Length: 422
Image (cartoon, rainbow, N blue to C red; front, side, top):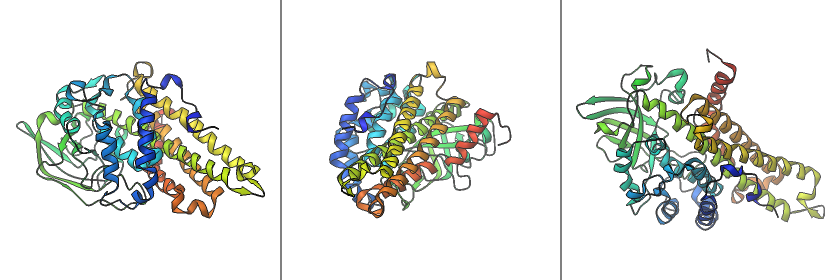
């Protein structure tokens, strides 16, 4: 009997620890999440049920330590040469259980990719922040504060706008940055975040890439305020809110790299965001495959299992084909990020744009798969206990973020058709 483990993974993309990671996270998911995820979906504000499950993954299993150096108590995934593919496996398995949890988990490392991935590692900052994660007995969350009220995805539209619309400012006073601004929607805000990575400008209105700044801000720094979490259509485990920075002062060394380099390596943050989004959506698709397979195997139609009906089988085939193709796409893109010596710099425009292309395709397919499952299950698919409708609500949000489909389309057109005015 075929399972989700029979969908194709390019073997050259697998990390040496893939089986171990898969088994650890899947066991956690089966025990701590899947039986309770309907209750999790109602726990969007207080996380009374969600927080203990996160603690078991982050602290008890040690997954919040993976990016940090061994001498600081970490697991040194960043230097292992398979950081992206190993992360893809973790994100995929968590998201199979609950993609909101996958997003919240993935985003604890998203900001840290600025300083923690070979070949560019800021040893000083990584060592300074490591104890927060490696010595804590609670789940520690990082948040990338990027989107602003007036601009939507403008900040992510780097190559057209070059940071010129950023309103959050960073002013250097002596050996401190003074940060002022208003962000909204960052994952792991709403009172969850322990550490922010804040996208700023050192010169408002400037399109000079040297004025783009990425600065780390501990959440308990005076002047940082997180609003109440939003109630969203899905992704309850991913808290989002408004965040304000009011004359927030942090050491000068908390800027990730410096003029010109911050925006360069931020493109890699975009690439990793696309890779993670593919994993989140693929995890949803794999679980929908499991749910619909069980449903059509155990429900009779005209005296035989529903899967034996030709109309139903045709839809089931479309679902399996989508999962197969998206699996190959996702693993291959993660492999590209690991093998940058073959595919080019992880922070290049081309790699980031291909990530957007793959993310757009997989998110679209995930929504199609959810719709197809609903078309077979009918009113049973709409039943909240069966989780198809939950997956559909969650994966729609994956399609919308990081500029949504529209920004993906514009960047693809720029790269492959040399569009000049988009």
